Length: 325
Length: 302
Image 1 (cartoon, one colour):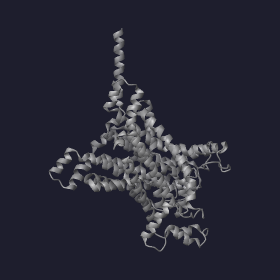
Image 2 (cartoon, chains in turn red, purple):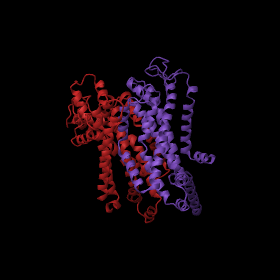
Image 3 (cartoon, helix red, strand yellow):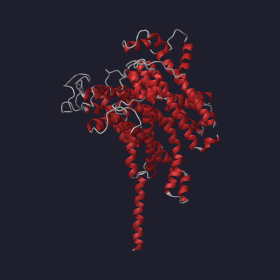
Image 4 (spheres, chains in turn brown, red):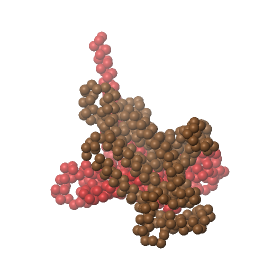
């Protein structure tokens, strides 16, 4: 319990640091963001909105520390101001609309990739140098160094443009009204195939390689030899003994990989025009929509910290030593 | 030095990776010799498929893909190496300092490292690049370098902590060696493999991230690199109009250097951690033993 509380405190401080960066970045950069933005928006914003815009930024004639306090207050009330690109929609509405898509995409892809990578890693380590290992491990190694952009673009070219099997973009057929009915769900799933698989493909190599290496380390330990000598079945030694212990470092590796999950999903969403947070951030960045960018970065940080915290809790469940501490 | 090279070449993965990396470095250095004209010069009609004259075809703007690719190699490798050096330098200094001094220094540095580690990096880079305006390759190298050191610092610290309790370090402490000597002469050489691993990993990461940022349109569109090639190809809808070569060339270049560098990295890992080797020789010996056993069994029965 103390471990969990300590981690929770850490994430709170980390979030505060991120929020401070978010506050400082536009203030340290050359030029006044509000003016750049107004120039970019070219007349879609009425001049009287300028004042309000400056205020949502906290660009008011006040000392910096008062601006900072006001900014912190706005985080806790979820008030990120109005979007410039989609004026006058509040940023928070755009974010809540995009969040489920990103959670769906990253969630499915990570679970698939982690399960598959771990199982294959166990198998490859068990028969090290065997046919399965010498086929799968170099492949995983190669996959690990293939950037998400390349995977997504290749998938787009092969399956959507050349073969015309799958739709080229978006999360569902825009002609359909969102509902829980059969045709809509089917269209949603068909549109999700390519983004999920290409994001999964980017991730699976890393999980496989980590698990294989951890597993090989465990297989050399005395307790594994003892289990074998006792005459336990192969499956029992493999999964209940070696794999269970090899899983611990792989969970840590999973937490570290969350950064690339979010990065990868950003790219995947942009390439497939998937209406998630990544794509929204990209639109915001291109349009220099600063309220949107700032709100976006906070939400992404929050999502990442929450995911990290979830991994910590999983770690406690897997490692009994932490429960006593 | 020659001995080290021999060890490298004996490991198949490392040798193959090294060959790829050397090839890229040669291409980057010899760019002016390998190409006949400025990479941004219009030399042909737009979107010509690969032919004898233009081996990799031409872009929407009528530029030669091969020439752009060769010059792009120069930019991308340079950015990768520069950011890799920054990452390795910060990571090693932070990791070593934290491990050596311990106490409050360690706690502060370790805390900072962990915070940087849990921030979403690509979105942060995207935002930084957006606020800075369209940034050139050098600026990209610097911002990637300054934001990606946390992983290296963590690994270096962990390794240095295990070193600190070894006898030879304690002995040198007892004979009163100065701090700089302890860190630079006693500890650093024992961390070289992890520092090298960190460097190569950072180069891969930077090359991929630079291409990604530029693909998203945050780089300087006038510079020639693999990322801006992808960006221009995307803007020309190269995929939908069927001009696959404009996309394929930079994609292939990124994938191959990525594979080369990570082979090199895994080779280094295997050399310093023999357990990870695939047991080629031992496997063969065991097969032979089984065959012999079987033959003996047949003889006995006969």
